[in-house]
Structures are given as C-alpha cells and as structure tokens.
Image (cartoon, rainbow, N blue to C red; front, side, top):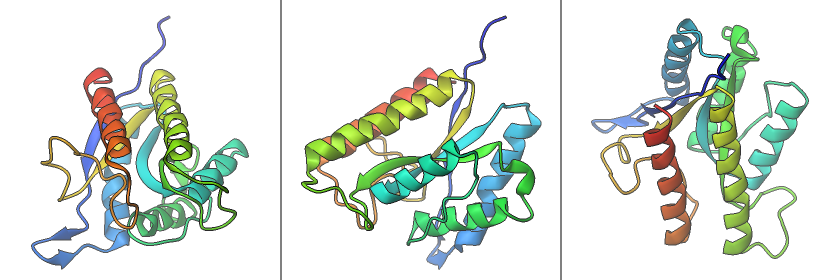
Length: 189
C-alpha cells in the first residue's frame, strides 16, 4: 500500500475587507470551515502556516510533542487568530484537537527566553527547520494550509502571509520562505 502524500492548499484569510476589519474570531471560524472540508474528505490531519516568534514556535512544538492541542499563543495579528483557534479547539471545535495544528514559521526572536546572539544566520537555520518540518508533515500525508491575506494573495513574489507585521525579515530570508512555500504549493497538489 502506497503512503498518502498531503496537499499544500492556499487559503485566503483576509483581516480586512473594504476597510472593515475582520475579527480574529471570524478569521479562525473561516479557517475551521476549510479544516472541516478537509476532514470531510478524509484528510488524515491539517495544519496552517503561521508567522511566529521563536518562543511561539518552541511552545507549539512542545505542546504537540506532549500530545496537547494548546500552546497558549498570545500576541497580535496572526497570533490573535491562533489564540482563537486554540480557544475553539478547547470548546466547540474540540473534535479537531488531534486533527488540526499550527505550523509555525519563525520570523523573529522570542520575547521570553530570547536566543542570545540572534542574527540572520541563526534565524535562517531555524526557518530551515520549520520549513523542513512542514515538508515532513506533507510527506506523512497531512494537508497544509498556506495562509494568505488580502495583501499577499495576488502578490506573485510573496503570496504567503509570513513575516509581515512587526517582523522585519532580511529580503533573502523572506525570498527563501516564499520560494519554499511556492515549491510546496506546486509539488503537493
């Protein structure tokens, strides 16, 4: 029997439409609609890419290694949506606790217990691990949702919502992240 390979699926989750802000809760609900569709199609599991600081990446990995669904993510922008996702996983969407996860892509140092001597080379190495982890999930049959928003969805160079907000990524790192995610979208269909 052949192993099932996952799919990399673009998902547009706007945070604003025609000048009207979309709440983090509504964004999370939109994500769950897509996750439900995948589950209905008998996907073995799903993740969504997430622009994280290194502390959030560590917290998510630790939670998943301990078979927990919640890393208690806090912050602004995408972090608010992830907070709502985790809240929903503890409540109305609890059936997804072992099915749906967050796939962090580290875009900045941790706020708590930051890495000393943080620089672009350290960040690049961490990002490589994050992207390799995503590809491993794909190769194990999980589906990955590539988070896009109204600013990125039509941007051919940077179609994924990674590294925006307060993260000021060096251009070569941003290009590398976007290139790998575009490769996943082309390869895992």
